[in-house]
Figure 1 (cartoon, rainbow, N blue to C red):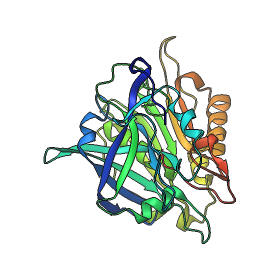
Figure 2: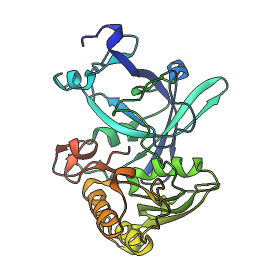
Figure 3: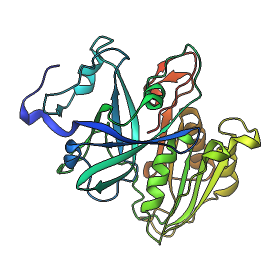
Length: 311
């Protein structure tokens, strides 16, 4: 792939990493820990919150054509150039959230939690298939921010959580948003209040999430309730969130962060904006995947059965 002059490169790059640990949190969630010297340059200042990265996945049995320069630098427009590549060399890109990061024995590592959808015989699901097969030592390519970056990050990698001066918050998501919501909640200070609703497939998917804040965390397992997808999440928000009070022109009374299937996110946005009176300009509504499409959010490609991508 072509590279561009130094002046055109921006603070998102390709990081060569390797799987160091694999942990099955439940039948739905698999945590994969990545490490490697390249991660010394990875990250953002402060908590990662809902920091979004991209994972480059090869077509099984084929070599992956990595974007950018050999040293990992990228440039504006790299994604459009990547889309022009032919398969099988192009591979796949999926969006995920950094669940946690740390330094162990002098080496940087990051956790990424994969929400695995049920395996369907004869159906290819690049991200879930890769995550199921991952073992320590397997190499991978991650696109994410360089910690030394001083400029705003582009859309493919960055933090969207921005409550401004709001101290009452609503976090709502399905299983694809559990990693992001968990990371956000764990970083919130004590003066935050509100609710976090997490809809998951099964009660075994409930995770321990600690927070210093006053945000109440509610897990909504569809099984054994035998609820349809998004039913519990929509009901919880509609029955819990009331119209926020307004105490001044510069005050954000309630900040909402929603990550779910695109149609679900749209319904929650409509309810919170039209019926509750939430200002859509100061909240975040993310379609993390789309029913009937493979890939991330509304830009996925049509397939007979949906693939979940955790962002």
